[in-house]
Image (cartoon, rainbow, N blue to C red; front, side, top):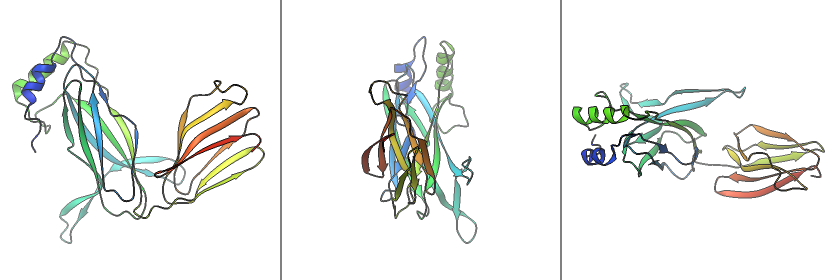
Length: 252
């Protein structure tokens, strides 16, 4: 696999007395619609040094009790037991070299059945390249890079994102019920429903708000919140590409 043929030039242009990469992956939740099979994820490096980034993918399995676990992505095999492809999500490339103040993208490709929704953790991890890594650098370039980081404060933060793969035949069915004291949204469809920009504010003073949050309602799950006197909830209910602004208060 060929990576970063211009590595030497990037290295010389990015070393400094206090060098270090600082990556930004943008939003931490991404969604692959049912009519798409790939998604371009871009990474920005706002640091003073070139970033060598490993992209790791694990599948998230949600249990009935609400807990979850992360497992390696499975592979598909032929009748002889030989691996043919991944059964799930993969990143191409899985190794990225992003220059200082530069941007690079990896394509997240989904392979496998689309009969139900699946979830993945995608981690972008800055590393110091080693011989065993799939980075096209020489021993001298690797040594120079390590020395440049050692001269400064070597803190390289990685980021994990969540990737939702919707089923091919996506169906939304959000059922809303309410009582005098509660408001309930139940996801009776087969794909995640998002409550974006969820705000809890005082009705008399719109600037008196709790921090804005985001909620995901998985298929078969529900979200219940208590109505509060003199408080108002507002949010965008996102069902795939459709968005609907909703408001809830103690009067209904």
